[in-house]
Image 1 (cartoon, rainbow, N blue to C red):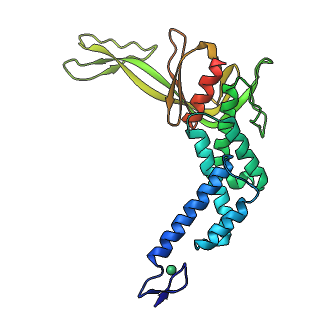
Image 2 (spheres, rainbow, N blue to C red):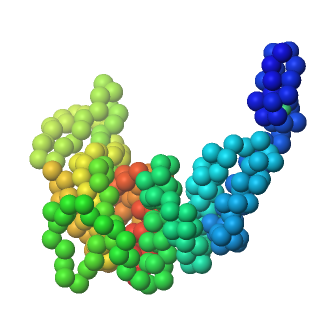
Image 3 (cartoon, rainbow, N blue to C red):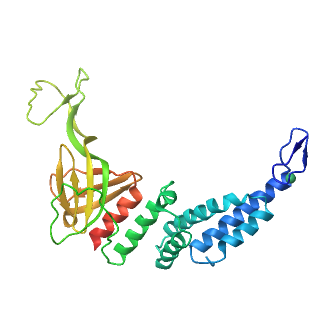
Length: 276
Ligand SMILES: [Zn+2]
């Protein structure tokens, strides 16, 4: 006969818990999490939060050692709320910072699931949308880029894959069914080859490097290719889940794609800076 892992009383043959005890634990855990989340969003007191969580924990079979975990999870959920309810609320951001300070939570522990990074990204976007130049991005090593005096660096992404979309003319069809690529600088005598040109698009990986975003330009720096593009020369931005596509305002410009790993942030960052 096993004992219930929650209440310690006999749970029945081959059983380790009572269903009611498990339910009580689950409800308590959720209640603790909500309490912490609301406090992190500025909707509850910080002073006695620890105490409140301890009392809840005790009544609902949650070990006291879990209180600190709840404090962190609550903050993470509050960050998600801050980013996902459509407006980056200044008060919420302030409360989130105060909560971190009050409980002495470290950036490392809050960033295990990238929550701290997402919080900073949200704060950067809010500042840009308010017309401020964010100063939150800190470089560990200087970038090999020559910025203009009148611009400031807002963010830099490393290990960014850079792609170009290229359109090539291809001749399709003909009796033999072959297709011949018309490559620049190479002339194929087609003779009696009958075909029709079709435009075919392909995406080519060009380089991997740093994408730096400033108040005036986006810069790419890689082993094969380096360039900068002023926002005024970009006619459209395309959001992707893991990056951004841009189209420059030039007759022969090819669509350019940058895979940063975070399309949401990259797209919001760049389009809002372009509007500044
Ligand atoms: Zn039980």
